Length: 424
Image (cartoon, rainbow, N blue to C red):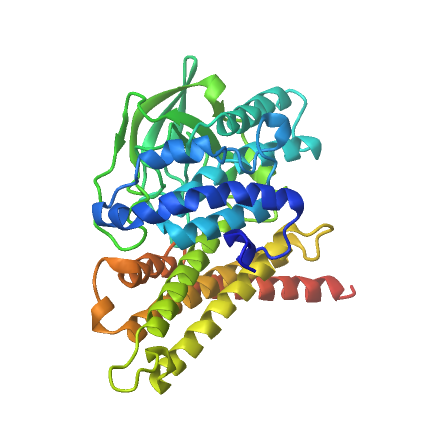
């Protein structure tokens, strides 16, 4: 259908309200698309996009209406990041990380409702959660910083940034290696570990103003991936954060995650929607160019040559594979009532993430081969797509690690079932 919203290509059963929110996203796509090539060439986030997204009312896309937001869900976010990914994957990625901050507001409130916090903890937890949500709905850009330069062989994300109690609040020291909107966001939502804790019970969260004393940006890096997302990260050197801007209740983070169907970052599925959107974008561009371009001797479309037909068929299969994995994961994480356990959803995600990103990258490689030397440039839709989608192969974890972890979950669950069935 000619009037179908871009986001409906992924979420093809939108409700009336979801279509209304997707229409807001649709309005910004022409501007994002127009500036995508320059953002990539500069390796910098287009600062004018901040006001663009604020004016469109999208900063509170998945914040409940009672906190001033649009009341969207993960379905809305996936549709939004997918649609933006077809236009400017870098902006889509940055927008995704802003929206992951909502989980730091929504999950604590769910944990309160589930009775996981003691009475004396509830006021502190509620105040922080509501502050996060109201900042977002009010147009404040939040950059969610969890990943670090310190890595662990036993975890995808190891938190070494420490929080030390001082008069009136906390001092943060550490380094965050990846987090979009560095130098762009108004606040960095930083995950840290309480001094003296070695377990997940010590994980805490802080709202760090971008210009706070002791906050500096890490050096720019000339890497692959979505170069206009400002993802070079920050350093924290004894940064003071008032108690009111902290959720430093021991065990709070673990209790939050008990209420989540998803992952550590929050709404992580929507990051793969960026990659599928980018894959769809390069697929459409390639098919259009190859169809319009003709052979000089026969006048037939280049797209009709046997070689190109094979490549286009392969691209189509890989793109559809990405859609199938993504839509299945979206169903598992949003349907009511749930149709899978948290463990099953987690295992499915570990496989899905890698499968989606691998398939999306394969689409870009097909476009590269089909387009020939004329498109083998650093600029242009094909050149950007190859580099943008390559990052999905290593972002957070590669496909191989995801499958390994999924297998571990599956076999551990099976072993537990067998053990429980043994009669003494």
